[in-house]
Length: 327
Image 1 (tube, rainbow, N blue to C red):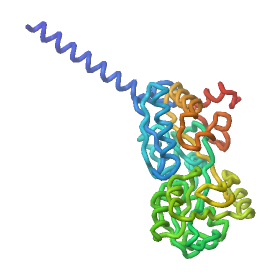
Image 2 (cartoon, helix red, strand yellow; image 1 turned 180 degrees about the vertical axis):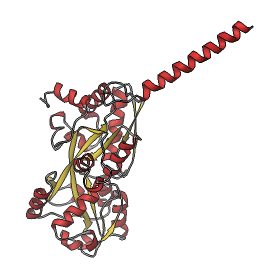
Image 3 (cartoon, helix red, strand yellow; image 1 turned 45 degrees about the horizontal axis):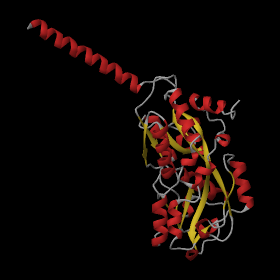
């Protein structure tokens, strides 16, 4: 009887030790060195009315189908919030604007007292177009016309806020010159529809779902940026590039000049190198499975454009070297 009891107790101890060892292997740590392989990957996107969220859904499906890991998608306040969440360890992958990622990793602007030091790049995706949206009823035809108006400058924690302040700046305005509202893209277009605000800054890939919804019942106006202001903006903030909202988008009648930053994916630096290699490869070699129109613009050949001084995760670096994109 005593011998049987001893064997049962010994077996229980062995099982406990094995379980502890298994947990350590799953959670892991260590800068892409091969020991951090979570069973579920959490992808941070943005608001449901933007471009990040539906794209994130496609990426989640591709990763789940192409790797041994399940990817789940979470809506969020977008770039700034995403970088902060990655720092806290509450997600593994996130969308970000390249300008926001640059500020985060260098400890500048809104990250002056909260530098992010545990995030690396996976690759850039497509242009994030700065769109100043209103309707023909508002009478707003230029950025200067925003003075005194109720204008959404983006949700707190979003890159749109910073873009809005910089566009206002080169036009001699600040957020104090407008009645600034901190709204998501959905809330912004609903506010324009309902008349509670006059215009909204939306930084997202075009076409943006929330703006398309607005255009179904309203004549949408995308306010242009004049060539001299575009030049001034790019000279002061080099992460911007010239961009155009094409004719036909939101039923507009002609191309509208504006600027853009790049959308990119970033990951925690502790993720296993082989895992990030698999994630990178699965996304860039299955772009035909991306339902959103931006899928056509996502290519390995252009995935390092606009990345600047941001460091790549070793797993992503390995993939782009194999593709000949990185020497």
